[in-house]
Image 1 (cartoon, rainbow, N blue to C red):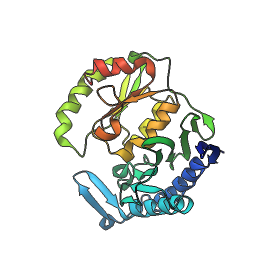
Image 2: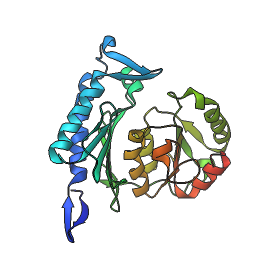
Image 3: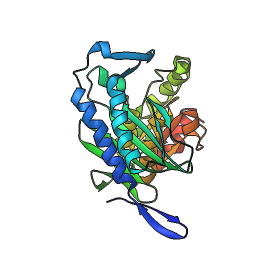
Image 4: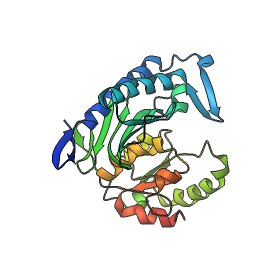
Length: 272
């Protein structure tokens, strides 16, 4: 059982944040899998071009919220579909109930539930669940990152020329397409390959577990990044914005990799 330790009035208190996050992720995923490949097209709507949502997104988020706020009613909850719930405080859950919605609505089995918990603005616990492979990733600040109970690490020994790198297209922000294509054109010849699976949460999980050595994308939302960012850090990786700083949750511009290739990935692609 994973615990996050804090001190309240000088006393050490263990709080089962990750266990609650895992329970919530599984609750949301059960709804996703119940309706996968059975959606009525009439129930799918478009938030903006190429950005889909269905009643399943909302049902998943509601199930996740009920678990989390049932355990921690005084915490704030930020979900992709229904926004911010609760008063400002020291604790905030950031939730993407269906990361990879376009894949989901088209029947592609590559999507995830992503949950992160912030304390005073710092992510301290996270869960990313892949319901198709039944793989559960979790991390705690200072305690490591895990997949199905086994410790995971980034691909520490690879050179950039040997690296498989993940990416995502700025499908919501076509104004960034030229900048994205420029980075792709520079990175592609320098690495072993580039992949675009379509779920940023799983892209982060793959870097954390060493399946891929890095990942970059433009203009993601906080719920796309927060859960995976802690996985990366606790697995020994580096995650920054394009300037090499820590403002990726604010800008949505993110590049992450094993430490050995991070600076080279940034500079060779003109991301910094």
